[in-house]
Image 1 (cartoon, rainbow, N blue to C red):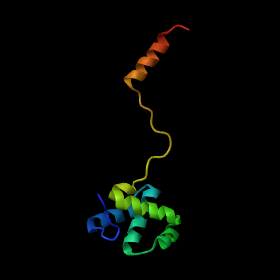
Image 2 (tube, rainbow, N blue to C red):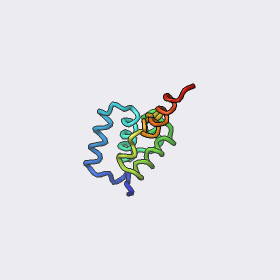
Image 3 (cartoon, one colour):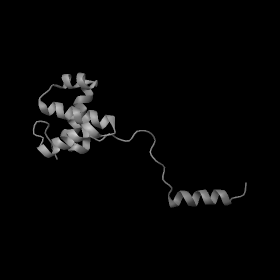
Image 4 (cartoon, helix red, strand yellow):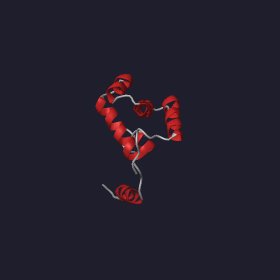
Amino acid sequence: MEFSIKDIKRPVRRRLQRIAQRSSDADHRRRANAVLLLNKGDSARFVAQQLHASRNSVRDWKALFERHGEAGLVPELRGRPESTVTEQLCATLLSMVEKEP
Protein backbone atom coordinates (compact mmCIF):
# COMPACT_ATOMS: atom_id res chain seq x y z
CA MET A 1 0.00 0.00 0.00
CA GLU A 2 1.31 3.43 -0.92
CA PHE A 3 1.20 6.38 1.47
CA SER A 4 1.93 9.99 0.62
CA ILE A 5 3.79 12.51 2.74
CA LYS A 6 1.71 15.34 1.25
CA ASP A 7 -1.69 13.75 1.90
CA ILE A 8 -1.50 12.60 5.52
CA LYS A 9 -5.00 12.33 6.99
CA ARG A 10 -5.75 14.17 10.22
CA PRO A 11 -5.97 11.05 12.47
CA VAL A 12 -2.58 9.84 11.21
CA ARG A 13 -1.07 13.29 11.70
CA ARG A 14 -2.44 13.40 15.26
CA ARG A 15 -0.94 10.00 16.05
CA LEU A 16 2.41 11.14 14.64
CA GLN A 17 2.25 14.28 16.80
CA ARG A 18 1.53 12.14 19.84
CA ILE A 19 4.52 9.90 19.02
CA ALA A 20 6.73 12.95 18.48
CA GLN A 21 5.77 14.32 21.89
CA ARG A 22 5.43 11.25 24.08
CA SER A 23 7.33 8.27 22.70
CA SER A 24 10.04 6.95 24.99
CA ASP A 25 12.09 5.89 21.95
CA ALA A 26 14.16 8.84 20.65
CA ASP A 27 14.56 7.31 17.18
CA HIS A 28 10.79 6.90 16.84
CA ARG A 29 10.27 10.53 17.93
CA ARG A 30 12.81 11.82 15.38
CA ARG A 31 11.22 9.85 12.55
CA ALA A 32 7.73 11.07 13.43
CA ASN A 33 9.01 14.66 13.63
CA ALA A 34 10.69 14.29 10.26
CA VAL A 35 7.48 13.10 8.60
CA LEU A 36 5.49 15.91 10.19
CA LEU A 37 7.98 18.55 9.02
CA LEU A 38 8.05 17.08 5.52
CA ASN A 39 4.25 17.08 5.51
CA LYS A 40 4.32 20.76 6.42
CA GLY A 41 6.34 21.40 3.27
CA ASP A 42 9.86 21.71 4.66
CA SER A 43 12.76 20.40 2.59
CA ALA A 44 14.76 17.32 3.50
CA ARG A 45 17.78 19.56 4.05
CA PHE A 46 15.91 21.78 6.55
CA VAL A 47 14.46 18.76 8.36
CA ALA A 48 17.91 17.18 8.60
CA GLN A 49 19.32 20.36 10.12
CA GLN A 50 16.47 20.67 12.61
CA LEU A 51 16.71 17.05 13.77
CA HIS A 52 20.51 16.77 13.61
CA ALA A 53 20.28 13.94 11.09
CA SER A 54 21.72 13.36 7.65
CA ARG A 55 19.69 14.16 4.55
CA ASN A 56 19.96 10.51 3.55
CA SER A 57 18.38 9.46 6.85
CA VAL A 58 15.51 11.88 6.30
CA ARG A 59 15.03 10.55 2.77
CA ASP A 60 15.09 6.98 4.10
CA TRP A 61 12.46 7.81 6.74
CA LYS A 62 10.31 9.45 4.07
CA ALA A 63 10.61 6.37 1.85
CA LEU A 64 9.76 4.06 4.77
CA PHE A 65 6.66 6.10 5.57
CA GLU A 66 5.57 6.19 1.94
CA ARG A 67 6.06 2.44 1.60
CA HIS A 68 4.73 1.19 4.96
CA GLY A 69 2.89 4.09 6.59
CA GLU A 70 3.23 4.63 10.34
CA ALA A 71 4.54 1.10 10.84
CA GLY A 72 7.61 1.98 8.76
CA LEU A 73 8.69 4.55 11.33
CA VAL A 74 9.02 2.06 14.18
CA PRO A 75 12.74 1.40 14.63
CA GLU A 76 14.01 -2.15 14.42
CA LEU A 77 15.29 -3.81 17.55
CA ARG A 78 19.01 -3.44 18.04
CA GLY A 79 21.49 -6.03 19.18
CA ARG A 80 21.42 -9.74 19.23
CA PRO A 81 18.05 -11.45 18.74
CA GLU A 82 16.63 -13.28 21.72
CA SER A 83 17.48 -16.94 21.79
CA THR A 84 14.60 -19.36 21.92
CA VAL A 85 14.65 -22.82 23.37
CA THR A 86 13.15 -25.36 21.02
CA GLU A 87 12.25 -28.99 21.54
CA GLN A 88 15.12 -30.03 19.29
CA LEU A 89 17.60 -27.96 21.31
CA CYS A 90 16.32 -29.47 24.58
CA ALA A 91 16.67 -32.98 23.18
CA THR A 92 20.21 -32.29 21.96
CA LEU A 93 21.27 -30.80 25.30
CA LEU A 94 19.68 -33.68 27.22
CA SER A 95 21.51 -36.26 25.11
CA MET A 96 24.80 -34.40 25.64
CA VAL A 97 24.30 -34.28 29.40
CA GLU A 98 23.36 -37.95 29.66
CA LYS A 99 26.30 -39.07 27.55
CA GLU A 100 29.32 -40.16 29.56
CA PRO A 101 32.65 -38.43 28.81
